[in-house]
Length: 90
Image (cartoon, rainbow, N blue to C red):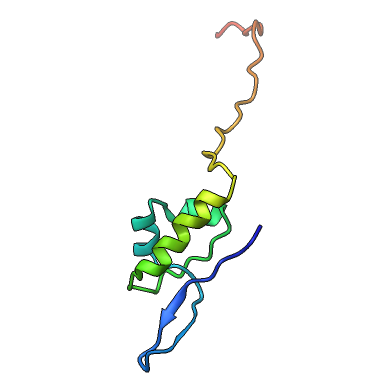
């Protein structure tokens, strides 16, 4: 799978690769942090900005990736033994 990196605007006007997408960018793209992690998208919870360029990149990535975001599976329960003879209480 192709990994994407967010683009960050530096104060001098240049752009650089960021460490991860901000929570606001993920929210605007319609994803949660857990969904992004399952899709192997980097998330940087320290970032506060949301760039439209990054939101569009996340949306494109979700369209291109054929992975379906599956919910977590339910925990399996242990089978309970039936018809155990109970000792009479005294």
